[in-house]
Length: 180
Image 1 (cartoon, rainbow, N blue to C red):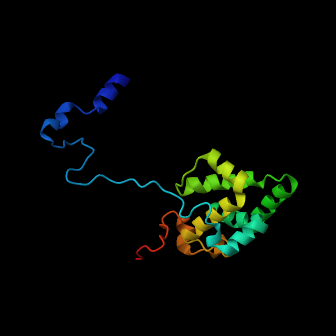
Image 2 (tube, rainbow, N blue to C red):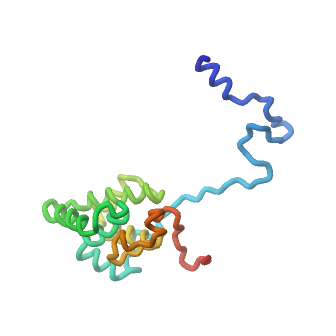
């Protein structure tokens, strides 16, 4: 069978459905009587400049950004390395080059991909170059919203549900929203 014959065989013919009568045929992609599915664009659970909603994290990040980065990186990498390793890497890059923001931007991009958050790499890099503490605080709050326990317990201290799903299936808590 040639490529043209394969394409022709896979293409539905106009006799499969009678669109003039509004009936759905066997190849129709719509279910009659069912509402169309709404697609909700995912967003960060908190704003970039809501740092003061969590004063302890804000202060730690302002004076020791490597600590906040280490906690975030350990969760994003699902415990591949301990928080201490990430703190030392970030701190070393910060000390020797001053550009640890590039490393933290890479982890923001990873996190954006994992949780289907807005992920324009240029924007993420700029956020970390211009306002790394705010970006780190936002990422930290996002993980907290997804039920990660961020109080220096590490990946091993997370609940079995979080360890199994990586936080993927846990819907974010909406302030003032209904609970189950």
